[in-house]
Length: 220
Image 1 (cartoon, one colour):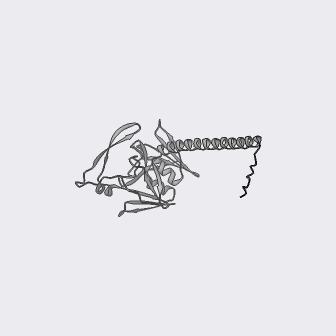
Image 2 (cartoon, one colour):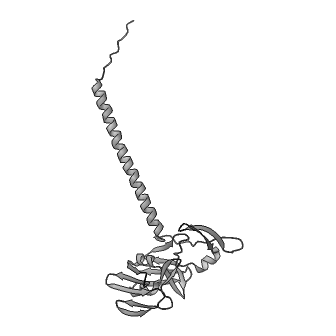
């Protein structure tokens, strides 16, 4: 019986060292990319969080659902939430009551949604639909300027200019005085609200109101 002799090929030590150094360099490079990637994610996450924290609304194809509470007795419910680092009590209406007062705003096929408990929900004031200034500017493409000392709002779009004041019915449209009807700019829940219909009509936007769904529709 013959035994076959195995032959071993010995790799020079220098070659082994070179291979190990290549692997170490590769790992270092990968670690740099991973670390950089994690840093980008962290920065992006902080940026998104900050942006979302300042924003009180968004647009969507979905029909908005109001904040409400369903109970057997139909009574409103108090809810403790944290706002600006302080605990506050918010009273949620019953869903039956919310259906009667909820207002939907639709601009070019997109519904306006207020973040839950943000206080940015549209509402009716003396028969006029009121929506947040920032949402109106975003939906209709206005540039906004706000002067807190005078409580003056300036809206600009293309060659059009609209100047209004909180609590006043007089406004300037392209330098000409125009009266706001029934409702005026006001501050509610620390947000500025504007009567949207008259401003939309100034821009030539088609306005429709569906009483059955309490939806104001604007088509540019």
